[in-house]
Length: 328
Image (cartoon, rainbow, N blue to C red; front, side, top):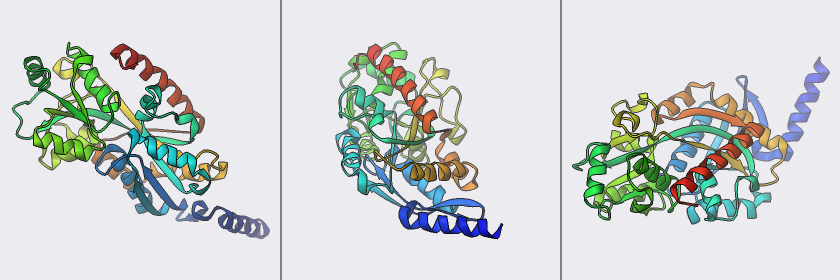
């Protein structure tokens, strides 16, 4: 028994030397990754930014990861970060890029030439409902009000979002307006590179409403900056129960946007396994539950082959929806 323990320690030490920052060690019964560098393909204040920082906070506070660092790399609708990760694959073994449904949408529409198959799939972690918000001083207080304003002045009732035309926020806005009986292709959508810039446009009156993630909407509502007039959930979400669903307002539109993590292509299997193990253990910690509940996220954990199957199905569903809405 003593010999076995010594051998395992030697193996772990050798692994640590070769794996550097991703070497697994054990503390308090939990496997710990030394450090993770999160690559965020958008600006500060957006959903990707919040997901990466919230995940890093939970992992480090729970003791599953020693340190977490963050890098915002916006541009090309997320394509700049994807291209960077692929081009510098050999030097990015410690990097995890956050992404979500837009990686599927933007590859389908040709915003960038890559797709999720060009990366190493680590894990899907959460889902986030979409929401439509207006500024706190807006005369619009419901989806019915927004539709009425739109019908009165189509070109003057713009909806903004933190994604490119045909991207996630645009898709949700069009889907909701179509479900409300309007022509989804006529919706005036103004794109912004990040949620923070889109919010500034809303407060300035450049746009009448903002299509965004529910977690971002909750933060803005709690700060007293916006009113949430519709959420794409089946039922009201406990994280902000004052926000009405689209369904209860007679608009048959439901949607949840997954978010997850990817590595550089060719990432060694043992490194993928170490990160997947850390994320799996994260779900059992109170630190993660605090972050998840605060943001109104839904756990949708899937790793490896399950994550791949999930993405392939999502690609088919989203592709069909985009064709129906006229985006493809």
